[in-house]
Length: 67
Image (cartoon, rainbow, N blue to C red):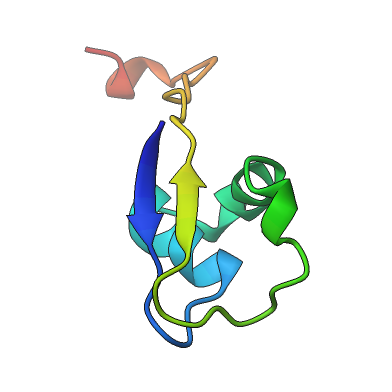
């Protein structure tokens, strides 16, 4: 887990996209920052915890895609 300091106008989905690589991680980000759920748009200087994400593994690849 690491910390991120918000810029004025940041939102949870923007932070998830920029810091974690996808807005799909928004819920995970929000769960790690339950004390900040009242914020829809952040002001500058808020400290947000960015959780570590596990790499997704593909269950099945077609034969021509396996290495």
